[in-house]
Amino acid sequence: MELHKSTIAYSLKRKLDYLLSLPLQYNEEDTEWPLILFLHGAGERGDNLELLKKHGIPRVVSEMSDFPFITVSPQCPENDWWLNRLQDLRFLLESIIKQYRVDHSAIYLTGLSMGGFGTWHMAVEYPDLFSAIAPICGGGLGILGFPERVIDIKDLPVWAFHGEKDNIVSVEESRILVKTLKEAGGNAMLKIYPDAGHDSWTETYSDPELYEWFMSKRKLG
Image (cartoon, rainbow, N blue to C red; front, side, top):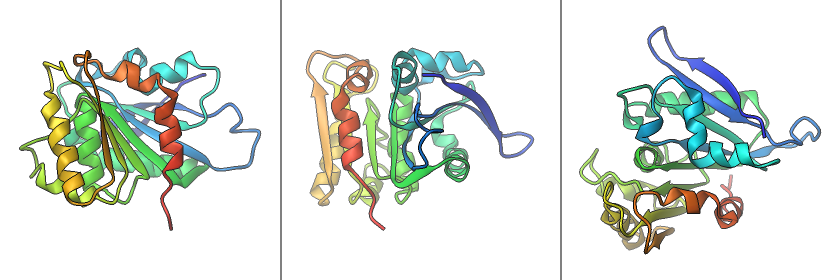
C-alpha cells in the first residue's frame, strides 16, 4: 500500500510531519473506516519520514497490498519526546477525523518503546478519544503521576505487549500498569514474550490477532 507524506502545522514554531495510508477501497466505497494512530520509537525521530517504515504500522502497511484501516503515523522531531507532543497529536488526530471518513467508534492508538510510553500517556490525557489502545514495550512509572493516573482509563480496553528479556524498558513497567488497571476493575491484558528483548513489536504487529482485537472493540455513543 502507498503511504502518503504530509505535514500539519499548529503555529510557526510547531508542526508534525506524518505518513497517511487509506484502504484500497476508500475511494470506491462511501463508508466510514477504522483508524489507527501509530507512535514510533526514539530511533525514528527527526525529519525523514522514510525512517518510520522500519518498524510498526508503517512497515506493515508498506508490505501489504491492502490494510483495512486508515493509518496515521506522525514523526516526533529530533531530541523531543511524545510526552511533550500530546496536544499536537490530538490536533493531528482531530484534523484527520474532519478530513477523512473515519468511523468514530473505531479509533485505535498504539506505539512502541518511546511510542509505547506515548500511548499510555496520551490515552490517560485524552481517555475519550480512543476505542482501544495497544502499548508495546512502553510504560511511564514515576512520570506525570503514574501509575496512579492509569486508573483514568479503566474503562478503555488495553492490550499491552512486552518482552521478558527487555533490557531497555523493563517488563515491570507493563506489569505494574496492567496490574493497576485490573485492580481498579479495568479491561486490560498483557502479553509477555518469554524470549524477546526490547523488540517485542515485530511479532506483535505481524500478528493478525491484534487487528482482530482492535476491530472487536467499539466505542459506544
